[in-house]
Length: 109
Image (cartoon, rainbow, N blue to C red; front, side, top):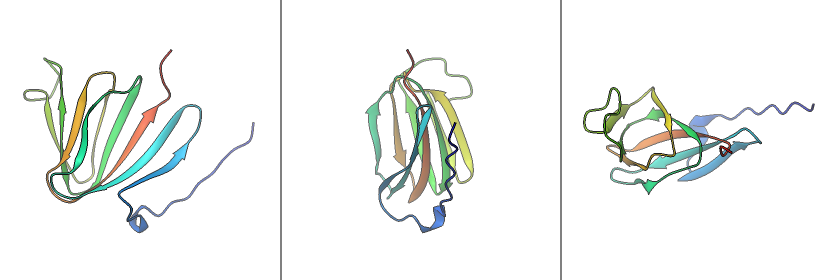
């Protein structure tokens, strides 16, 4: 099995969206958003993790009774992360200028 190693200086990324790495198990995408920008309602056939590197974002879910969420909404701040079942419809909106990483699992069978 061939090993692939990548080193990326996240502080040097300035594009709005950039695919950082992908393989048969997951992909990692970096986003830079201005206040009010984000990812409109969508879903994926797998799991996701959102990591906030800078700024703050609001994650909303179309699902009742989400543990730890008030009304299905999470406010994530710098250096926090949220892992979730991305098959649930969700959206992300930047509350301040924000840089985030999104890690998506491979599609579930």
